[in-house]
Image 1 (cartoon, rainbow, N blue to C red):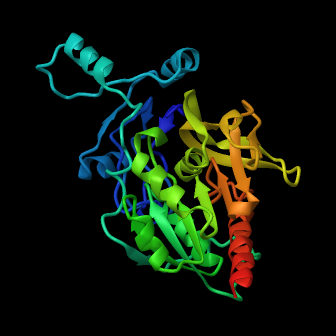
Image 2: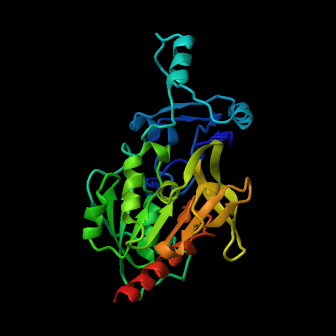
Image 3: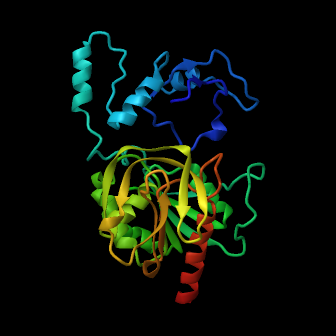
Length: 324
């Protein structure tokens, strides 16, 4: 965390975005000695301790950030093992790699399940949902955020969530109106099985990819992905929507990106990150697919890109009319 003061709002279970916390460690500057928020149910330190997640404070995180901005993403090690020397810990860091490592399989669900919850009335911010028709969406869980599922449900979707390794043939047997490929951690090139699944599905039903799903679509369409210097992380990234001219403020958290120069001519770049002009969205009308590199479902916000779920609904509705 680059903000120096962490933990003053505490933690509450209602804000969790997955069934468990997959965090490996947390590095902060100053840990608040008290919490002050009406929704708080637990202190940050207690939350981490219960889940056996390592944390460290009194670290100069601003200095680390300046180093990362200069040199790009670097590998670090946290340890409570006093028997290991500094050199041994450094050697651990040198040997650990993120490129080519499948991080999806460790965060995906293990069996299909139905999702029913939508955005609660106290949190609903949009009046534009389509409640006139129900669409069955199969969502591939590459590390899916619950709010993606809530937003789909709020737009009138019936949702079946499947594991990252679920065969395309089994998905198509469910006769879904659309398929969502979710966000997830790590290198898209490290999960060729997921790329093959996407290849086997696109063109058969409308598709929406978010974050990792966007990168997998890029590869499945013939493009290449690459590791960024330090990725995009934060809730204030400006994105230019090339289709309507709007600038959307977005929440982003990824280390890889699609190289638009490697995509075939019939694939359209629809969104561009205004910080570095990287590809932030794709569409291919003839294949009924759209994708975003960032999080349109971001909770608690910003909500600028929530209409992307409405676009997915339109794709499914149009495809349904053509197949009737």
